[in-house]
Length: 321
Image (cartoon, rainbow, N blue to C red; front, side, top):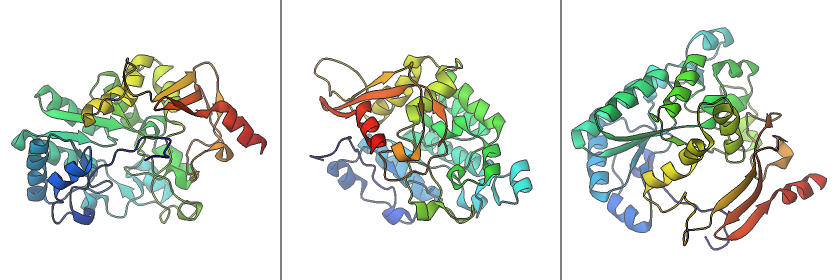
């Protein structure tokens, strides 16, 4: 914490070991400093257990974050189920694996009058379920990742393991629905789902490679390229979904520039483009699907707690070395 260059705020697990069998001691975890609860990457299948989790977070006034994917429907799938999975000969994950999980979680949310945040929404039907629940006045928020609005299942044709993510990249129709949901504020947050993996974990045949991509260093530029420049979002709306809205959901005083506030800032040149290159990443992991892309909006400075911790000149020096 003393030497870190970013602020890390932890989630607590919903269940012990994320096994979906017994609830964690949520009260003690809140006292330890968690800002929410999630079984990250795993859906809590037991509805009775999830109901109790909703009841506890309601008392603790913290969000419950759900990875909505029914593991029994997802099975051993590695990409979206449909035309492209058939053509490529890869096991698919049907959109219904997400949609059924969302429906169950919203039903429990309604039953308990609690609060829910749905992580990395990826399907058109999922956005419709969220929209309906919000109209009913439920305390529900949702997020999408940059890669789910920039890529589709067709990108898997390359068999690049960096297109293997969880949930999987979906159809073009789903991608357009996600963009529309962002524009209509059905989706509140854009979050990276940053998942670093080693070269050994990623450079395997597609079915054996680890799921997930790094996203922190490309997130803003992808959002501007895919959402701001085409007119789906204004720049201020995009920034809010990356900063202000997540802060509100987590109940932390961040995301705004104000007198006396925490000076965590990024200064960006919106008119400067840059190429995504493995060798330029500061992350030790290089598993990005955007290698070789030319993106807008170059970060020139990063300021953490009032101190400059990054400048683009650092990257220039790194390239020279």
